[in-house]
Image 1 (tube, rainbow, N blue to C red):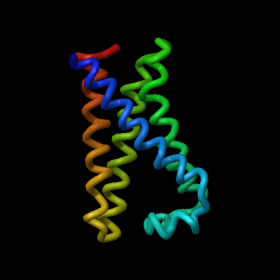
Image 2 (cartoon, rainbow, N blue to C red; image 1 turned 120 degrees about the horizontal axis):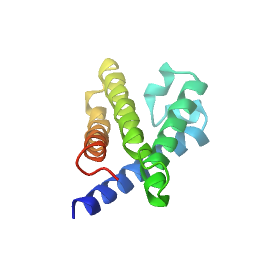
Image 3 (tube, rainbow, N blue to C red; image 1 turned 90 degrees about the vertical axis):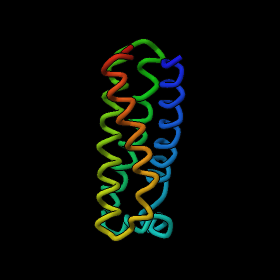
Length: 124
């Protein structure tokens, strides 16, 4: 039962971060600024790097264990996404955008829980 819950959580988290990352990779910094004011503080390359990290993190959550190769990459990806989301929370707080911290905080908690549980008791 718990394994199923973890798979569902990982899949939903992967979809969320991959969608967010894909937008950052596909659109220009100027196009993103309307929806994501924080991009004004970063270069186009930095925004693309964040997007790439989100896409790769999402892939890392589900693909390695799904194909049975290097399954340890799943909790490693979850750890990386937790760190990335912690950074997002800090950025929003520094910019005075406390209301924009809810989604990154939720994603941070989910990623951290996946990392702890997949490194620990419910490892692959």
